[in-house]
Image (cartoon, rainbow, N blue to C red; front, side, top):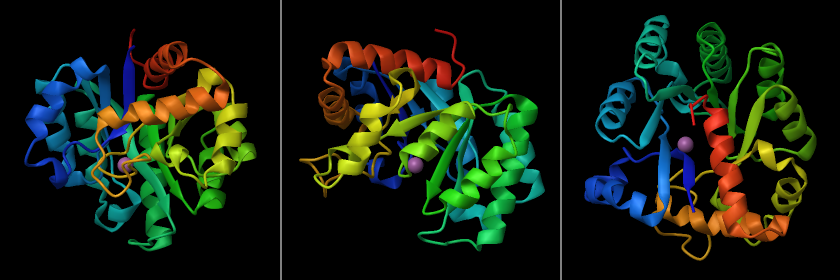
Amino acid sequence: MRIFDTHAHLLDEQFDADRESLIAALPEAGIAHVMEACCDEAGIDRVVELVARVPYLYGSAGVHPHSADEFRPETLERIREALGHERMKAIGEIGLDYHYDFSPRDVQRTCFDAQLALAKELHAPVIIHDREAHGDTMDLLRQYRGNLSGVMHCFSASYEIARECIDLGLYIAFGGALTFKNAVHQWEIAGKLPLDRLLIETDCPYMTPVPFRGTRNDPRRITLTLQKLAEIRGMDPEPISEALFENSFRAFGIEG
Ligand code: NI
């Protein structure tokens, strides 16, 4: 079975003590590839350094809405430069977070819009974070119709929004929250969407699947999310993981 964890934060300080041994253990655990998601300008060089030395990791460069108030026009040049590396495949994670509101909302929108414009220019996939900001996120994404590819990460909106995102060219990623006991609404969405537009992810060290909630998440735990999705769709884990694996390559424009 081949698995692609399409969203991880292996550079998070929670992995400082055992990052290298954990990364080394991934292939044997069936985790063939991981997309390391960047969160701020300071993280860009660290992601490039990581993917340059571990051949089965891919990376993104971008400024998360939490850090939007540190975004400067020059940041775009750093992202552009990072995307020149052969395993830096996306601009992300970018978007809007109206749950925490760590940056003012107008600043978040400006930062998101500027990075969407760069993605359009570079024909680069995006990794989108939308937390409690579905209306404004969709308003911005619609302005890039015809020029979008990439992922709606940690999807938490409605079935109708998921369909619209797919029509806009995006893939829908589900994480550990799919295993939570109260995730009935998400099960319904994950069961109805076309299989060829779905992805799975960990968002580790966060979003740990049941029954490990409360402990640190890592890419190997993605098998629990995979099992849940297989159960929802009435499929065996093996064929569904193969489909998701191929989706991941298409979503990030990776040659298979
Ligand atoms: Ni993330």
